Amino acid sequence: MSAAAPRIGIWGTFDLENYGDLLFPRIAEREVLSRLPKALVRAYSPYGFLHPIELDAGVPAHPLGIWSDERTAELAGQLDCVLIGGGNIIHTKDESLAAHYGVTTQEILDRAPSKFFIEALGPIHERMCPVVWHSVGIPFDPSQEESLRLRKALAARDYTAVCDEQSRARLEMAGVKTEISVVPDSAFLLTRLFPHDLLRKSVDQLRQLGWYPRHKNALVIQGSRYMIPSIAILADQIVALLHRRSDLVPVLVATGPCHGDHEFADALAATLPIPSYRLPESALVEDLVAAVWGSHGFIGISLHGNITAFCFDKPHVALDLLEFSRLEGLGLMIENPACVVRDPSKLSKAFELSERSAGRLDTLRGLQNRIDAHFDRIADIAAEAATARRDIAPQLPDDDSNLRRAYEVRGRRMVEERFALTQALVASRARERELQSELERHEFALAQAESAVEKQAVRVATLEQRLAGLEKQRDVLHASRSFRYTAPLRKVGQGLRALGFRRH
Image 1 (cartoon, one colour):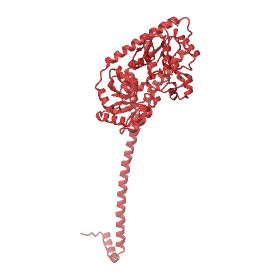
Image 2: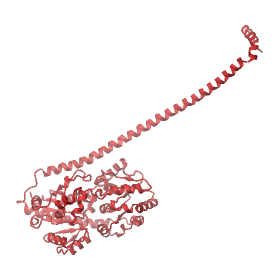
Image 3: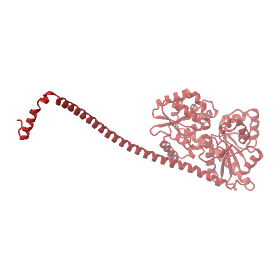
Image 4: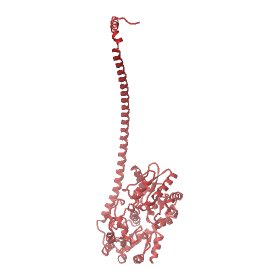
């Protein structure tokens, strides 16, 4: 393999139902290939395709497997460079992932994902296959034991990048002496990954499927199960906001199904006194991006939901009800700390303030320039490592490129088939509406005919009633003595009329 075609692995939790995690490998692959067009970028996760999810659109990660000396040696032999991240994955609380993967605590501890993310390949293998932390987050203050692990892991690495100042401060607290760079989350580049034509088509599809408003502006709302205790206050604030902006309608989305986003959406839909739209559980990453792109604004706890809104210059409020440092860091990074709200009763006013804070493209470009410099350095590291190993490194399995192409084709086909099915569904619904309209016309004509028949029946009944009355009068007349006594005279009259006599 030549130096122009390095093999790069990106490791993270890309096998979880979480919007942000699924952005990382896609953005990384695009940025690496724009710099190293012949490179092979392969995503790895604790379970990978052994834990299938809806959001990956049929392009799953490969399993990292169980951390061991044998496994790290195998991976080091197949790759020229490893990127770890992004996301808040630098911690030792492996047991917290068990519920997300649907496994026992012991099973996830045996698999030890934190060893892949912290120790990675180990100092010996990393001499030939460098490891780079790719704008990761460190969500907890490190203990003494964790600090030792961090110092050992990072001591020999040439380049390490975290996503915010608090993560860097935690590494400094751990006694890490190597240089630590702060690089914005790579999701700030998502505008390059999703062209407007695709987003416009996706929004049209959401409308046709009845998941998105046609005649009003969408206010995209997201939350997790941890926010349900505040649901009544949030609902009141949303109603107040919509009262001020009558052109908006709520659209509920789930950016993190693994965090109970659908449970929050159920609770909010049941609490709101107004109807709302909702993206289904089968929604793809493209649907979530399109929903925010086509909206008036976003409200939610999702870091990447807020980043998406910021990238498209939409008003947004980060609901930091659990006091996540990454949301506070986001507010500082985009120079808009007021967009982060910890008191749910201040939501409506915070969103109103955010509506006045539009036009932040200069800030976005500054963040993107920093991320570009980060990917430039990654490309240099990967190319240099590939050159050094060109004649000694074993190749990846021969079928890898074919397998990857098959997954890519499958993913594109899924999207294309979905668009086709949507068009067929729209045509079917249009035909259904035509048939329904025709049926309504026939039912109206039938109702008119039945009404006319009913009127005729009433008229016939009235005439029959009058006839019966006349017949009764006739019978009474025939039964009278006057009628009997005048019978001879009537016969004479009939005879005269027969002879031509008429009364004058």
